[in-house]
Structure formats: C-alpha cells, structure tokens
Image 1: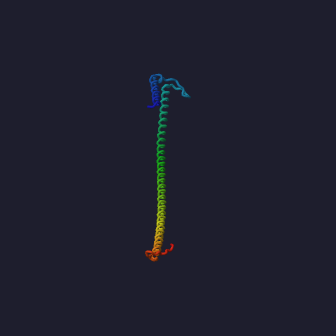
Image 2 (image 1 turned 60 degrees about the horizontal axis):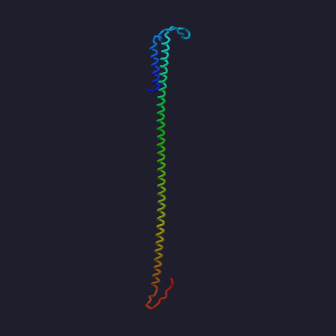
Length: 170
C-alpha cells in the first residue's frame, strides 16, 4: 500500500470515528437557511452526506483518470510496437540492401579478377609464343652456323703430317 493510500485511509477512518462519536449532534435537527427559505433538518447529517457525495465524485474522477491513462498506455504501447516493427522491417530492408550491394561488389571483383587472369594468361601465351619463335630462330641460326662451320671443315683439304694448310679468316 502506498503512502498516499495510507494517508487517505487514515483520514477516512478519522472522519468515520468523529461521526460515530458525535452521532447525536449530527442527527439533531436545527433551523437552517437554504437560500429562499428556512427548514428544520439535521445539519451535521447533511454535511456528512455532502462530504460522502464529494468523496464518491472524486473516487469516480480518479477511476476515470486511471482508465484514461491505461487506455492511453495501451494505445501508446500498440503504436510503439507498430513503430518498432516498422523500424525492424526497415532495418531488415537495409541489411538485405547491404547484402545485395556486397554480393554485387563481390561479383564485380570476381569478374574483374577473371578478366585480369584471362588477360594475364593471354599475355603469358603471347610471351611463350614469342619465346618459342625466338628459340626456333636461335636453333635455326645455330644450325646454320654449325652447317657453315661443317662446310668450312668439309671444304678444306686434309693436311698431311708435315704440311701446313693455309686457313681463311672467318
């Protein structure tokens, strides 16, 4: 029980105790004016009834305020849940968008890597072809030189043991 509820309960008990202890005074009829005329009625009982009516009115007002707060709280909770779901959907959409962007970037990188690899392989094949061509040319040149040397050696007369054969410079 809260402090306010405890204080309110004590005040109601004090009013009830005061009314019970002074019940004889409360029900004693007196002459009282109600504006246009005068009547003979128990003034204390009328005041106690008005106090009770005022308490009932305030109790109804408090119940109305609490129900309004509860209804507003539920409505705000529903709105917050709807906003949370909307934010979650937007976040999921952003994640999906980011995933598709990253996949597109990865595909672009793979395509670029494949292009570079194909260009590199083409360049290597071109260099290999050039190397083979030069190797073949070198082989032919070497074979031609060897052939020329063989022709020179074959075209020379064989020398006997004491004979000197003149040689031509290459």
